[in-house]
Image (tube, rainbow, N blue to C red; front, side):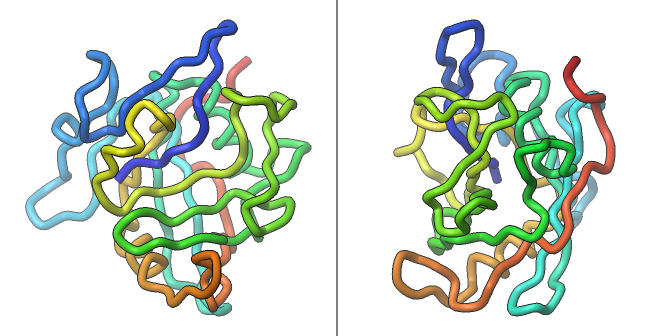
Length: 200
């Protein structure tokens, strides 16, 4: 499933991309061109060997449950991907995902995180500075279902390669008011496993 964020601003123009399962531009990722690796396997093949692979180690209620590995589409949305990558590695001086929570979970839709400032969906940061519309923020969501209503509204900048079972465990977490998980869902660790060097 896709990882979504805000629209990417590129040379003063806002570019939009449909979610991966819908055809968009010819170089846009689709579910059809990202094959599953091996019969019965849960690990997807990488879209590009130059794209970064990042990870989250997840704990629910203080108990480790596993790792989510994600490919970032640096080849399609470089600024959005680099923003997310730096928050995964912690190299940004604006903060990072390690120790932050998934603050919103909606079954059959998505899990949302990235507010390492306030932890409730009201805060966001960017490695590029600023918080105006069509810029890259730190909040993101991982889709767990088809979402045609989000087409042309959010940028898909990555995909879960491995650990969708962990995403599903997060999705199954009981929630309260505002779709907030009743048990803390924490990104206990995060970083980069492979892929491209940072943007110059």
